Length: 364
Image (cartoon, rainbow, N blue to C red; front, top):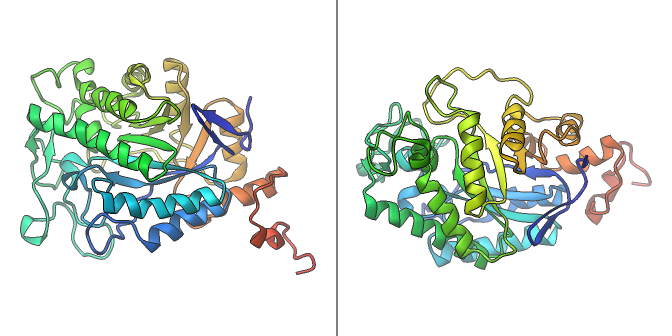
């Protein structure tokens, strides 16, 4: 079995290890124009310098209406593309691969940022918000109802993802991820709890997956043959009658046929406050199930916090890589620390940090 520090080749991209940075919303575009800035350069760049193999951006909207909040990043115009180019260049300079998570928030769009405001739920149009869209008019709990997307709107969503993919590749990104988790638009279509359509985009699992598969195929067509495409799934809605890992394994196999290469397995996010039994690595069994049931490559996420835990997940074969968010925010140099603590000799310690390679200073 591979180890945590073995490289992994995905199409034309070789990632130096199996410790990857999960997308983390930052709510830091104070100009509200979707253009990433210095915060994003330092936030993502620190984790590249810290040894991560693959560094993902936060959920990056493919259209203005797809923003979660008005302080999120975008990839729907050339100014945003050019700003990402600078950030991707630094990530590459540190030896990491750069991934972008292409996203549309659907009924969870136009929400107040998590920090900086003492408000939550839908941002009213009078406050700078906008009309949201979704598969049906069912609102996310405590949010305003969305408009049901018509066929022209669905075609626009597909076109926006394809255009975002092309801009992302022009900016230099190595990996593209379609966000189909955490209650955002693709997840809303997949789940019978948020999709009550009676046309070819609702009802059966095949119909509920139709928009996602169109998006994956469009992103695959927009990308070159060397570009890996990921899909992030929520493997369960954590309530009876919702999505579960068996359905997601089926959709993952379909998505692979449509052009996806790798699957990022998370959970929840579609129904507001639900009981989730949190524990270290609590989502790893979902990744393991999808990997084996669908015969696909996956990464695991969720309360992975120690080098030993991360190594065991990969070495046991339950996932091909781990993706970390909160632990990376606490320690952007987690990968360097993991190499030291696990006794692995790596050749990508930044020269500036070599004096920190040992627990006690040597000739400091």
